[in-house]
Image 1 (cartoon, rainbow, N blue to C red):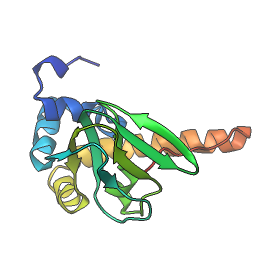
Image 2 (cartoon, rainbow, N blue to C red):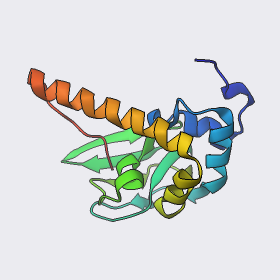
Image 3 (cartoon, rainbow, N blue to C red):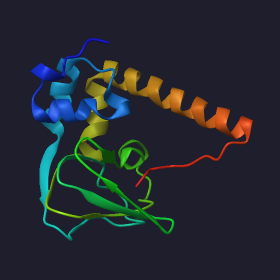
Amino acid sequence: MANWDEDLPTEAAALRSVPFFEGLTPEDLDRMARIGHRRSFPAGAPMVSKDEIGGGLFIILSGSATVQTGGKTHTLGPGQFFGEMALLAGKPRSATVTAAEPVEAMTLETMYFKPFLVKNPSVAVTILGVVAERLREVQDRIDSGQPVTSNET
């Protein structure tokens, strides 16, 4: 795949870091970046809370965030993301995410993303292919007896 990131605006380049979007063209990423919003969170501020519905996808542009789920904690930094299942399926959050330091994030809200997919079917087809691949990977893990984990928040 060609490396287009050098010519992309920050938001579009951030979108490329999300596996669901990595196969999209620069034009698709640019259109998608226009429906996203930058949000800032001061250190200690909750970004999302467990069992909350909505909020969509968050891509960390700067700073770091702490994810707490299932009694475990891990840290996300620039280029990392959370909320893909909230974006695609509207499922409740499975974790609480808090800004560990000041965080600048790009968010894609479900209420804007779904109409975007209707108007941009090539994006929907690309995402569908990635989702199908992920489901196959999970099925292969189940079939081989490997643990199935989720990083969804």
